[in-house]
Figure 1 (cartoon, rainbow, N blue to C red):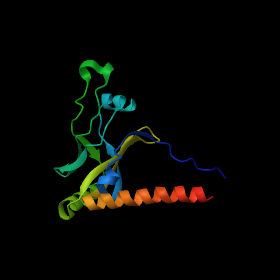
Figure 2 (figure 1 turned 60 degrees about the vertical axis):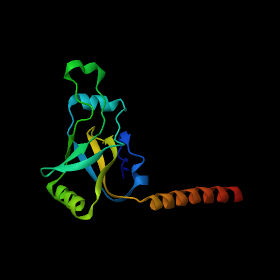
Figure 3 (figure 1 turned 90 degrees about the vertical axis):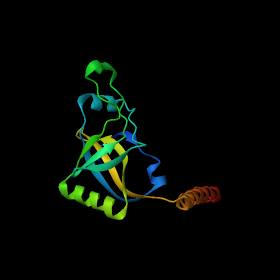
Figure 4 (figure 1 turned 45 degrees about the vertical axis):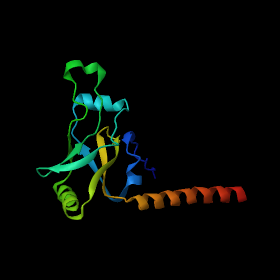
Length: 157
């Protein structure tokens, strides 16, 4: 019997601070509408989504404040680096996300942007709630204790 290969994805950008600053409730994979120069520029790996978020406008979800730098070889046909980009989701998913944003006060945070196995740019969105300062400290204490526990167990043998 042939073994299945794990899907190969190439991560373009990752939001590492998201899991520290937010309590992640649910994740969704979304497509993203890009121009040709944005795709070429994102292959270079200089895209940043650290300060971006997703917002709803007219029943659609848009990625706001993501920075995809200009593609140097495109001269006058280039794109605007921080423009709003439409996210591609099913209507049922959009309604669920908009409902959670409006009713429960949650935020849509991009976790990572990547090329899937078919070469399409995808965005992993998280439905998240902001952490308070004491929650962040608690997370840091747990992480430090896990690291210290690992060291002690390795030292013991």
